Image 1: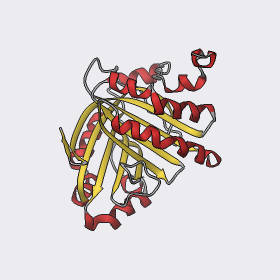
Image 2: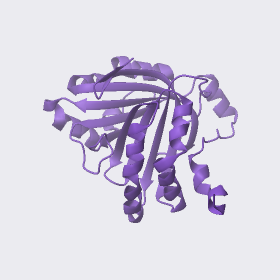
Image 3: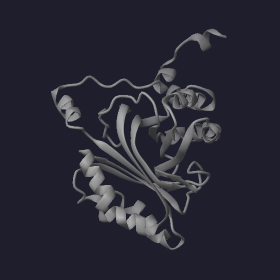
Image 4: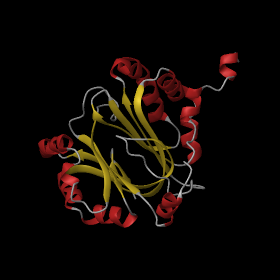
Length: 260
């Protein structure tokens, strides 16, 4: 192995499990009360619902402005090839929402008119309810507080997102296909989906794994590691976020597979 291979670079450090930020009294109080819970919704629109679906992406968080307990939301499009293609998918999209408390998230899932509208227009729909166990970075300036301990066993989830610098977009996308192919073949990956706020420049990946070990094995090897080293080494992102989650709920159907 070369000296370069032995040297731990700043880029390598970027993909390692983020440390929880130092706590203060406010953060401790938030964690003791349960703290924020995230909901990620994956939708494949029914054939007659494409116009409605694309209006959700265009309107962004506006239809959610009256949802109780909502602190942050992003309506997301997707691409072809499992969400990772450069060409937009006409039928697949997502919604990420962060709530003050778990009961707010539960009420949104169970009875919100927004959720009912998605159900009415979906061919397939999958819901993940999540608590952060590790978090680094921000999304449009919003961080996600850590409110759960890492799971000793069982399924886990991750969300990575980045705002790509326009002049670095070609370099980013050049490294993307091998990492995406590796993700689809990764042992222990139960679900993976590429999402985005804006074509080419604001991208996210959500994945669910059968164990923390399976997630780590993918994150710290092969094409994914090479892509992360390049991204951080070449300063490709103007903003990024990486969150690991405890999976509180995974229910519904996605790509023909039923969860729950």
